[in-house]
Length: 445
Image 1: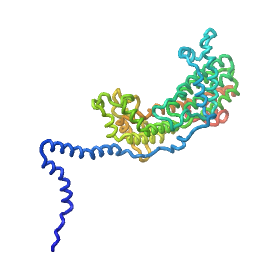
Image 2: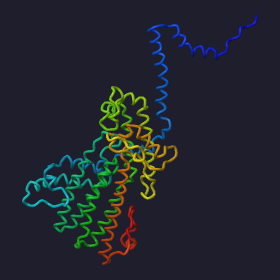
Image 3: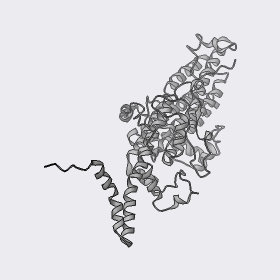
């Protein structure tokens, strides 16, 4: 008996593929419409999922751009942590906005004897200021462990640190006016040391606070060093102190790494992240208010799903920090140019307050700077989370130059007092006052 041949397999596949069409053909009326809507919905699911997956195309997951273990576990001993004392000082201080606006400003002038309220205010804050000054002698500083940082973290001890710097500058000016030049340097030294510690192991904004404080201390130090009553011995001691103080400044990449980990902590807390961006999406100004569809109920949640968040933001942030960390510690003259939103279509007025820029150079497995900028501009979450790196780098470069400038100014003053003449060039300072020219110094001659 001859066996009946089996039909080709492809016929079965075709039959299965056409089954929905045959079913629709056999139905009528509302049932046909319902089946049509059902089939269209089922066909749309893979399309939606494919679109969602496509949001990660071209975004390699490069992983953490540095070894994060040491940063997450770092915690200085309590007695070595400047913030142990900064925190106690803040809790013990007494504030008066009226008096501070009048007294704690440049030019630093001690209140007159007739200003009893201001003098009493300064007296009541002596104990708190002493605690703060003790903190400036510490070897390290950390306000909050990196594992606790996120985009909503507050840093009250960093913010109030500027208050104690102003108090210390006022005391330095008083000591100088009274002729106690050594005591004046003691206060200036505390200001400069404190400016390094407040941003040490902190995020970018803490470093920027410290940079502003160093500028204030450096300005008053230059006034102090120009006093003809100063001898070379005290000036040399100040120069040595400045060298030790400047060493406390960690590389710029350190702040960037802390920023990165705080963002990773934010992305890891999915519940808080959804509440932050979905419950009040307008709060950060990263959503276009002029687009009608952004006002529809559930529009942001739909966008969240379709754009594959938060994974898309995580990959973009890793690429952004990989780009920054590759170049931010190098000399300004050797770093690639920064590119960013000004090279693209300008964002709307109600767009983000600041947009990130990227170096026009990148390591392997990363997007080019311009391609990365385009991706970031299209992602509301990343625009809201990423720091304005161009602003931080500008402050960091200025801080580096200011530190070098203060060293050179002090060295010239020492040379002038010891040699009885002006140095002809900065090269005369090497071997007589300095071992080498400090990093960041740009000769004018």
